[in-house]
Every structure is written in structure tokens, then in C-alpha cells.
Image (cartoon, rainbow, N blue to C red; front, side, top):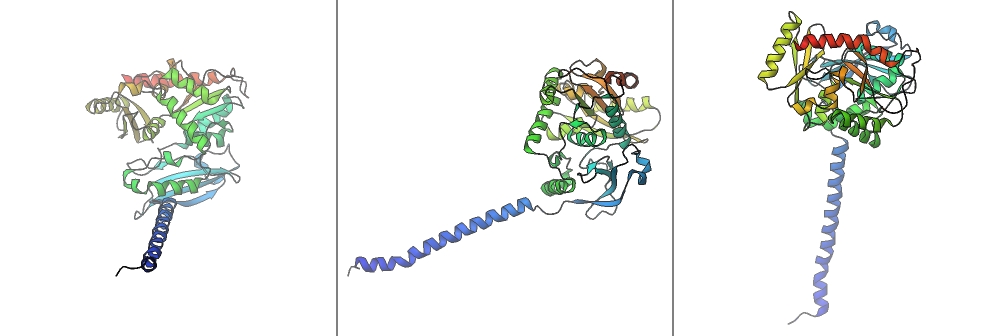
Length: 373
């Protein structure tokens, strides 16, 4: 006996109710899965380290730091601890003005591997900031790596092209790579002032300038600065930082060397190590009285980039560079005027910026000549 249309419809009703229910469950499950992924993305777990406050106060409380010229700053010392390790991995001093965001002033790494950033001597930074304040016009624009820019904006009072925190450009060691997202989130929260999308775009263009050959790189720097009188401050460690964010464009490495005996003996050892490992040239950073760090470039084309030509590598001559004009050098910092824009005005002290370069540049040239022997 054949079922009537009515009975067939009645038999189909339970299945027709079940399918929408399954669809609702699947959609709900999909939404929950997306929400879970979103939660994991925005809550990646704890960072593998923490900043622990040691002490805080006015510059008078930290006489060894040499910050007497900045009495209004609030200074704090932090030690950096990792999970399961009793001793600090690094020590840093932080400064802020009023209710402003904190700015890292120095970084002393206690391990053999670079963590977050490169070692930085505060004495070199304060010397640079004082020179910029003395020898550059008040309305000058300063270009530099994002962390150097934050420091100089605070200490020199000059406008800088970058003033945000770029946590995505920190140096993340291999053991911490799986928690890199948590690390960057922690850094953003700690320092505040996260860089805007437009600022990040400008910084990528800045990196383009540093990797380009000198004439093209200088043109990009002028493009970024507009018509303002502008200078670029570069540190020897910026090349390594650039290699971190542009790994396909720079083949470079670093190694620490103890300062034992005379300098010529160290230079001979450096050259042998460089040749044995097929590197083409190097430059040095003084870490302390007992240790120096060598930065090595492997490819000849890397040595022809603007940043390599601005730094004292064995095959570069910063004093002869014409794409940008050397105006000051101290420690690991090199400062160049970017051609174009307004004509350089006399500084507040009445001294042209170029006059500041003579003595320091001559001394550096002599040191480099000895290093190339």
C-alpha cells in the first residue's frame, strides 16, 4: 500500500527539524572556535621573562649614571628575570618625564646571547644627546633607529621621526621564539606608546634607505624628512638590528672578544677569525673595559649599503662619504646631516654643527687606521 502524500510529509518532519539543529550547532561551534582562536591570539600566555623594579627616584639617587643635566626625570632600575633562573639576565635603566611613557636608557646583557636589544652604554647616549642639543638647530628633525629616537626625543628635546614602541622589531632569542607573541604583548604593555600603522610604514621606508646604496638611501631619508633641516644618528649596533628585521638582505654575525694584551694583537686575531669564516669586513663595539663585540659582514654588496658606509667598517670611509655629511662622532654613534631642506642654521651656542665633527672624527680616523694595519 502506497503512503499518502500527507503521511510522507509527516515522516519527513523529524529529519527536517534535525538538520537545522545540526546546522545551528555547527555554526555555534564554528563561532566558539573562532572566539577561542581570537582569545589565544590576544592572550598568548605569559612572557618568558619579567622586569623587576630594583629602585626608583630622581637622578640624584643614581649618581653613577651621569644624568645631572636632566634633574626633572624619574629614573628606575630594572633587572630582567626569566622563569627558573635566579640571577638576572640583564639590567636596564628607564627614564620618564612627568606622566610620560618610560624610555629605556641603557641595556647591560648578562648572557652570551643577545636578548631583546643590543648592549648600550648610557655615557655614550648622554654625550650624544648633549651634543645634539648644543650643535643642532632647535627645529631640527632627528632620524634614527626607533629606540635611539625615543631616547633622543627625551634627552635632547628635538623632534624625532619616530617616537613609538616597535616591539615587533626586538631581538627574540631562539628559546623564546615560541612565545614571541606573548613577549611583544608584554613589551607593548610595559613601555606604552605603541607605534601607529603610519609610523610603522615610515620605519619600513627608513630601513629601505639604510639598505640602499648611499645616494639612493640619502634621497629616501630626505623624502622622509621633508624640507626640514635633518640629521641621522646611527650606532654600530643598528646594523645588526637591521639584519634582524631584514634577514634576507644582510649576511652578518657578531662575536664577543676579550680585551687581553695590546690592541694590535686583538686586531690580528679578528682578521684571522674573519678570514676563516669567510667574512669580508667588520666593525667593533666596546662593551666594557674587558670585552669588545665584533660585527661581521659576509657579502661585498652589504658593505656598499648606506648604513655600512656610514659606520667604521674596514672597507668604508665615513669621512669621505658625500651622500650624507658627517658632523659628529662619539663612541659608537655617528651623526650625519641629510643634504637638502633648509640651509643649516647656527646653533643656540653659535657654533655650526660641522665644527663639532673635527676633533672626534680625526681621532676616530686615527683609530680606524690603526685597526686596518
